[in-house]
Image (cartoon, rainbow, N blue to C red; front, side):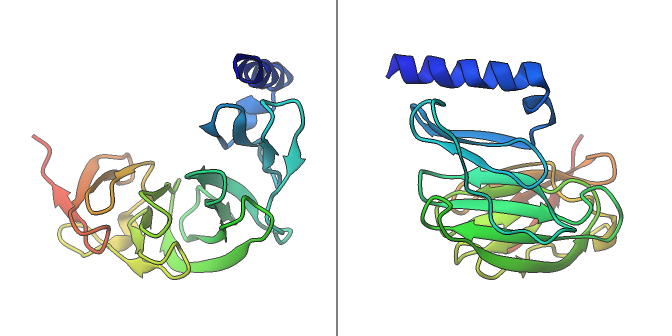
Length: 196
């Protein structure tokens, strides 16, 4: 097991030296020697042998989409955030979901419009958040979890940092990440928290 982990670390160091990991959108290890790397563009590389062998398991993506984020809970359940333009006003996204480690993928377009980077977070295979959107069916459908209180929804920049459990979560949002939001109902609603 130690050899596999060392091999994976060696590979990541090599990719870093080549500039691939420096451009990588995500790296996710789910077990010793098992993990995914999204080096940018349209690839998701998967290894189950500590980095000795790698396989591209990326979902099929149209030419105008690129992989923005990846999230894997375990060796089977994963999500990929595909973005047209991750940093402009009116950006829109699609989420690809797999229940078999990337062998097959289902796509779900996201109709909500946000600007800025988005975070994809799942507490378990069913309950997750995409920015201030929520899902209770593994991401097959998404509902708007943002409830206007002091800001207009179009001012949200997405959520660069989201931490969730099944029911409870925190996220930072705003043009300069200057607002804190909390959910206590698995992302169905979010309330802005006053920061002193």
